[in-house]
Amino acid sequence: MKSPRDQASAFRVRHGLGDAPIRDMFQVVEDFKGAFVLSRKFPASQEAFTVHDEESGMTIIAVGTSDNYERQRFSVAHELGHLESGRMSADVHSLPDFTSSKDETWAHDFARHLLLPLGAVEKYLTNLGRSPLNVTIESLSDLVRVFGVSPQVAMIQLRDSKWISKRDFEEWPKRLPSLTSRGLAMQFGWASEREGLVRASLSPRRPTRVVKAATTAYQRGEISLEALAQVCGVHDVTAFQLTLENSDIRPPATTEERSERGPEDLSDLYRASP
Image (tube, rainbow, N blue to C red; front, side, top):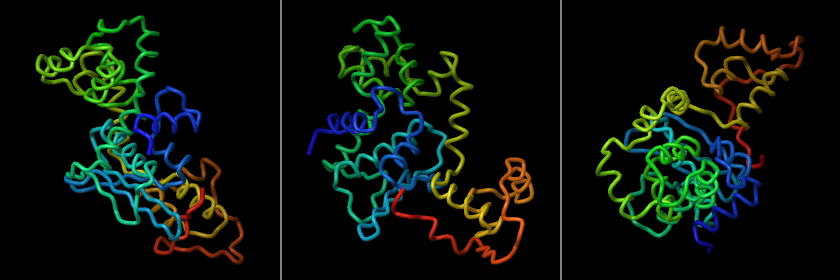
């Protein structure tokens, strides 16, 4: 098996991602792995889990809603790492996994290299006019902001690409105990931007393909408005209907042969193929 760095690089090359920041980890996994990715409220001890069924070929990744936007992205990338390693079994894989197994370390390193490749560190900072071993905390903030990673991940990549010294890597957290994404955002002027991302990561999210399939089924008169609202995670059905109609999304005008399934019978919206 390739190293996690090489596998992450191969994934980016295979899907034309280059060294650019990945804006939406959920969509990348859905588009390129055919998996269903969702977020929902979990107990505090649970971050994510993945289930892969060999018989149907279906993979579901679920991550917890979180006020830690960067951690949520990392959890999705970590689960993708298990799929890319080829070691994902039909059993449920769950985060946090407190074992120090090679598979867990591999998936962790894969996520780090996928979200912030070493080449991207050099390219981005060079374009900003920075130079190796002359990097400031503001440059760290830039990487955290643009690539959506934690300061810890960004610092590891800065160290491994030799843009900061091992001494800086060890001393920065000691000198700046509030070296967090939130703290950097407050200090360097992008707090409101990050708050918007946090609000999104706190909201439950459904797999795009499921929502799309449900919307199409509603327009064909195959499922009810209430069923579509449930799939979309909407509680105010009346307001939701108005929003749909304003977007010209309606069921057929005729009720002939319409089969409006309710929320309890939507399992076929989950399909193994994209």
